[in-house]
Amino acid sequence: MANNFAKRSFLVILQISLLAHLDSAQLSSTYYANTCPTVETIVKDAVTAKFQETFNAVGGVVRLLFHDCFVQGCDGSVLISSTPTNKAERDNDLNLSLNSDGFDAIVRAKTAVESVCPNLVSCADILVMATRDMIELAGGPSYSVELGRFDGLVSSSDNVDNKLPLPTFNLDQLTALFASNNISQEDMIALSACHTIGLGHCNKFKSRLYGSTKDSSLNPSYAAYLADKCPENSTSDDHVFLDPVTPGTFDKQYFQNLIDGTGLFSSDEVLYTDTRSQPLVNLWANSDASFQQAFVSAITNLARVGVKTSLTGVELDVEREPSYLQPQTNPKEDQTERRSISLALSRKPREHRLLLRLSLSSASSFSLELHPSPHLSASFLLLIPLISDS
Image (cartoon, rainbow, N blue to C red; front, side, top):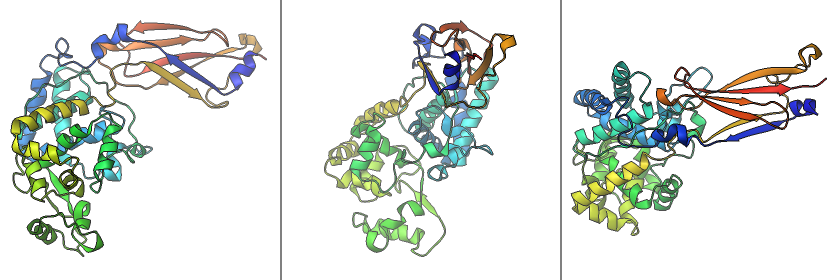
């Protein structure tokens, strides 16, 4: 019977609550108060230095946060580099326009933090802090950020497909995509104001200028300017400012641009041409206080998407007789062989590292022990004895 158990396909699902051990891992503005109290100052200093070198870093960092959160949640996985055997998120075609200044700003901030608080602050949290700081430096609102995210250790280009909005999306498509991440339509419109900074490439809006897809909602003077920058038969991929009026300031001008017909992407302009979203565009174009309040709420909600704050379950899915798990029958060793599997999960702050040990004493029963371990690296160890009879 035990032999049949060991050789058949099986699924072990372990659902456990770790709140007693990880309650401080829930998002909080004071998450690092005891472990790295100066982290926000360290990040801001690094980000400020990058900002002073190039304004391009502002849009770069803000886009990194959005592209990170909408693919597997806000876990820093967009920062992971590809390997010879894995194409990471950042190398997906939809992410190739993420600019190097954005990545560099996060690398600098991470390096600075590690020099003071090694192995304590997640890249996901650093990205959230850096985004807030870049927005403030560019003239946008200052706001408190929630911290305590774990980093993801998986980054695959395949996970990006169908997760990010396209510049051709209409209101229904935008609303549906954001809703799939628990972001409301109002928050989506507020977050779209991030297009008050940064650059847009010709290949993302050129279809609005020529032929059967020419967009009549474009302001004629603006359309002529864009056509000059992006000739119909040109193969170059030039770029223009997303905000033609105040490109160096994070402000509500974005909404006035939509009213004036100078939204760069059709997914921008539709927020005004669609009567369902038009009232908010009008409101925020005329009220800086109302816009800033809405934006802070929206970006706070964005930074909560898919957050990894604790381990609530471990799943091991073993297909039929995988070679690395097949038990070897040996009567001299009481027909028992033990194998170990290391499951790489989220990186955790040092004080929350645990050793998860599963002892399977028979085919039908097991026991679970949780051991706090300050020495365990960024993984959990699942030990499974495999039982085999001759």
